Image 1 (tube, one colour):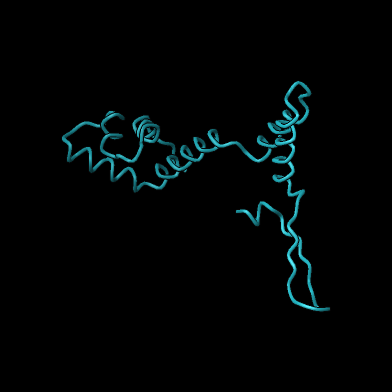
Image 2 (cartoon, one colour):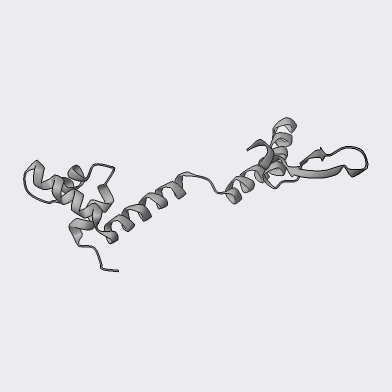
Length: 126
């Protein structure tokens, strides 16, 4: 993939939905119309669009805790003996739910043909 120019990289770094403003901040020159055209053209370039998408994905990843991070957090509460037991119990419950330790029993059918299914609570609750 073609390397981005300095202006293109700056455009990627500052783009927040407004291509005209990103073009202006990136150092492109011209009238509002010219900047709008540059912004629109930049967004059509696959390497620029891919770089914007990668930047956004990286920002989201740094803001949202992963499943493992949440489990580590809850585990630290479970193991902290100085905490109130109810807080430790709640952390234990959340950790168990995240690991699908609890299931809801669902029975389908009637009589001898009953089928029992265990459903993970995270799936049942959404």
